[in-house]
Image (cartoon, rainbow, N blue to C red; front, side, top):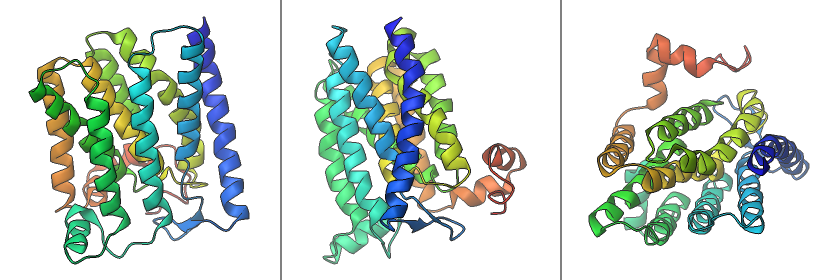
Length: 275
């Protein structure tokens, strides 16, 4: 009953927080141009983090098992924090190769700073997992690749949220314990649904803060709930996406495929469909 109530409150709280953030950013002129050049709120991710913290705190106070929640919360705090750097920084380089190249020349970019922070955050979380060392390494890769993977897909309104929701459902159905996976992911999935109208209508961007948080949550859920072969497949799939994105524009691939383009545009206003 309590968990059902939290699931009902999560989207309401997220939508309210998302609206407040948009007003907050605009009042301070802290806006950034989106892919169409429209000035929008740059980071709706803090609304997702707020809801996760409230749900985690409620579970703790209600005496529920918090063994996975505390390290998960530390992971999501770190993921959203380092994502904010990219949300408010203007960069002249992009892609992992670009940021690494800039770093080798002595220029510390926000993207490289994010990578430097992301790795120990992922190791901190996976260090708590009751897994043999090889699987812990796979879990680290799953967290890092999925966190960056959702971020790579956050190039059009609603795209990252759709992928998060789809992968989240697949994880729940593939999990060793669907109930435990659902307890971890459903509050964030409900929150993602609440943010969807704001993202789809380009009132605000999910941003690196939100995308990294959602991707890290998927990686954490995979590490905690999948059998080893499935976890390896999960990490490999996100790893392949990260590698391909260094060479190919994911948006161009989606736009050229009729089905993917149709699904990608679902929910957007007519104005936002004009890419």
